[in-house]
Image 1 (spheres, rainbow, N blue to C red):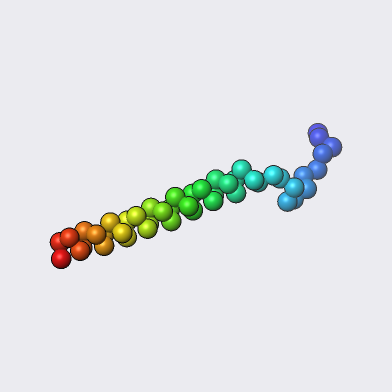
Image 2: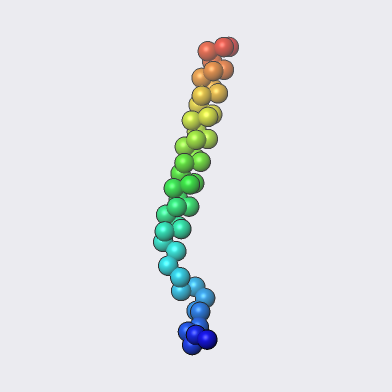
Length: 46
């Protein structure tokens, strides 16, 4: 068996953090675009 022990919190998670930040950014932009589109449609049909 391996003599190495896992030390909690030692893993490099910079890639996961970058992916999560990108996901949150895309969701936020998508929500803003959706709200603006609905407002525009409401004003045009109003």
